[in-house]
Image 1 (cartoon, rainbow, N blue to C red):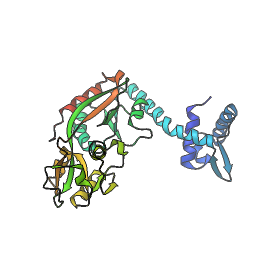
Image 2 (cartoon, one colour; image 1 turned 135 degrees about the vertical axis):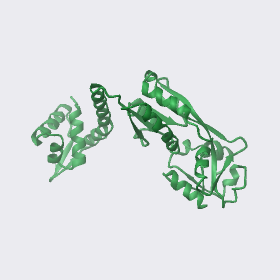
Image 3 (tube, rainbow, N blue to C red; image 1 turned 180 degrees about the vertical axis):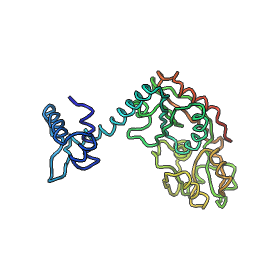
Image 4 (tube, one colour; image 1 turned 45 degrees about the vertical axis):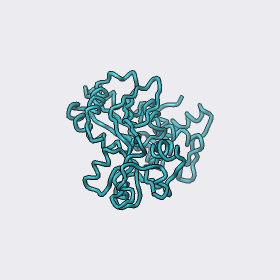
Length: 297
């Protein structure tokens, strides 16, 4: 009953704003487009849109199908693209999902050797997911998930590829800059800068501040690593980031890295993939290269 063309029609109407433009985009006549949707409405006994003058307004059912279309059509397109690559004897693409903002700089160190050793293989990186990184992996939106916080599932394999220490980064102007380690209560008068992710995924809160029942004076979120570090360098706040990244930026910015607590917070970057694809050549190559990347930790 429900076919891909119905989803494509709804997506094109939402994107183009009219039946005529949607029909042109899909290389259909307007009557064929309308007939296709009308037949689906009759079979499902539900209306998908109503006309408001020259405008099209989706019903609740139409909005639901549009949301599904935005989720499913990219998967169809990727499957079709993969089949075309097989037909052309191309080697395909590796779709990588990132759940770790600062890991992007680490990933860049792998991309160049991967492309050099894998002719014909493209790399696509996604950092935003409609339903989260694990869902993207389950739904075949991505082939690999890079995360410091793996969730163990029977059908998913995670491999630890790179160890690092999470540290506090402060300006050389900060009163904290002379310390070798910092304690939770010493951040009670600080502005903490983090990425805009749930507190449950921020180690600085979960492994450092909250166990000690401490909070920073202010908590601000920023999306870009460079902006966060520029703010820290200007003594506008402090941030918790991997030590290797802090040392890299400390070459050009007036910042220093300080251990969090007595023992520090030690993490690993993990690469996750579907278990039945563990012998995929591209995945094996990527993980092997990931384990060879050396940076000061």
